[in-house]
Length: 227
Image (cartoon, rainbow, N blue to C red; front, side, top):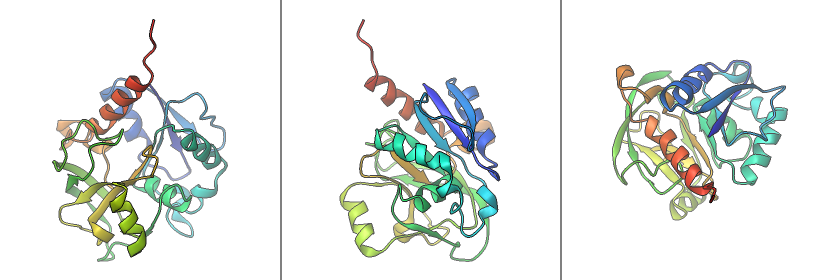
């Protein structure tokens, strides 16, 4: 399976994502510069964390209108897996690929520590290697990770099982303690916690690598070639 890690000016978790895929998962990955990249030949698209365009205007707002996001939207519409983490999640929200918005953390402070999450939906292509309701450890690192949506949107997310991860302690004040959601089609996941930074036990947790393993397993099962 071949992954594209999209790099914007100000991305700073792109190497973390690349390492998790290449060195831990042992799959193909390329760092794809936002101005020159062609996403057609990749099997999955990863939008990493960081401060794209210095978080000018709003976090993810400028990156959301970059040319490569037109490609991301087309590929997502065709069912290609897209994962946006932290700033990548903000970009997905700003681009309209996922519903809702990000607000500053409730306590107006940058947070960088390990968090306990609950797997709210293990039936997505990103989460089948987890148990339903399982708790996992992923780090967070954000100043604007307070996910907001109105009551109507929240009810729709709940009805469609689009809420994938929730916080056990809701550190940033997110609506419904939401930490990650998918689109209705189930192929676009946005989340604030960092699975790529939880890919090896030596760095505090290996719970995150199962997200990538789920994706690879489900992609391969969907692309079996009968000889």
